[in-house]
Length: 268
Image 1 (spheres, rainbow, N blue to C red):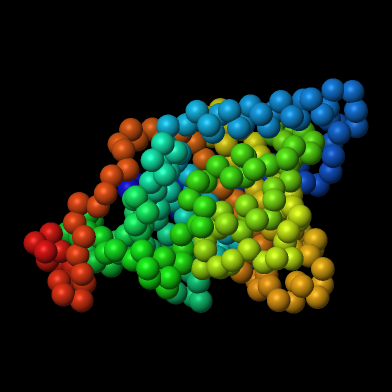
Image 2: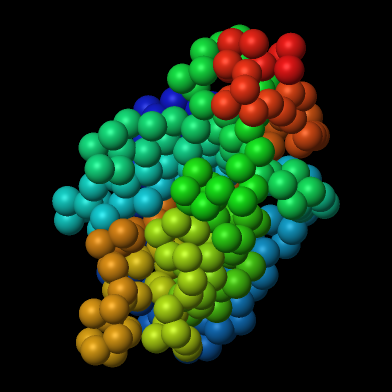
């Protein structure tokens, strides 16, 4: 899959985060009038749902931070992906600095099987993958729900936020939309809890900012102690219809690295 530079994504996400922060700060002028507000915010969300539903292959970038970046939030990792709604297949690339260790790994999910490719194998192994379907340690970065449109399709419209809309997103969708290794299961205490988010369209691009920190605030203190909230505080992402018309297909070469070195994987 084609990787985007961190600088390119930082610019897009930065603009989206500013909009999200502004939208979450207050109800704004649109919220001051009860007249047609409910219809307008509902229509805005419906338009966004329609936009993502029409996407052939969804190209997306997600970034998890410890908290709101304006309050000193630190990046935990990035996910770049392409998702095919028609097949359910995904191409993802994870770039993390968890525990201070820089790591980049490519994933391919096809027909219920999960494969991965490491940049450390070198350019000659770019089309070589290892099947890690049953390896939880290696597949931890993959979302439980591979469909990246969850912030839009699962949202409940609250109010207009500039050109976008402030929404509530069920906590369950937030948890399953992020890497499964962070939260292997949805904590029972999150039942009925929502995260506040702002979704903003920019032509063909949709930007999202999800306030996970305040989502934790809706959980009873006794139950919150059982959840490692340090793992997630702010989720920012962009999504658009991929301009790369290539279909997501099974890996060209699947090999066992315990038997064949990556440099020879195409001969396996």
